[in-house]
Amino acid sequence: MNAVLERTIDEAAVMAVLERIPDPEIPALTITDLGIVRGIVSDPPRVRISPTYTGCPATVAIEVAIREALDRAGFEDVHIERVLFPPWTTDWITPRGRERLHAYGIAPPSPSATAGCPLCGSPDTIEVSRFGATPCKAQWRCNACLEPFERFKCH
Ligand SMILES: [Zn+2]
Image (cartoon, rainbow, N blue to C red; front, side, top):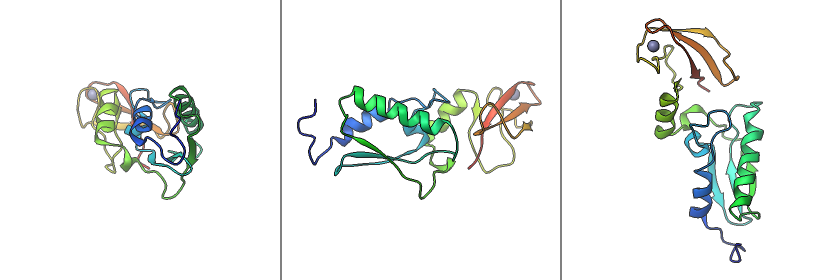
């Protein structure tokens, strides 16, 4: 499909593919919202990505999702390069990603010891468990609306 894909790569087209790939764990977010796409390189053509949490099973799922999406879009020649340094941090989640997390009912990561309830907005919340449904998230509960919610752990 890409006859001109020799030494050049259509970065915008590849980026458009990446921007539509949902995070396997939090489908409300795309992988570009997460900030794990580090760049697109032409020679050889490859996408550079940083895994999120080390050992997080989502890392493999994300790579599989990227591979499938690239192949579907005709970018079979574009490889995936894992970049480990500097390591990904939650600071790289984009402002749009933070908004989407919040809208999805997950408190975005922050260095603060407290988390605002993503459901009612109350600051009166408490961490119930360091571990939520996945190692990336902690389980919290709101004392105002009594609803449990997850918080993306700062990393
Ligand atoms: Zn609440």
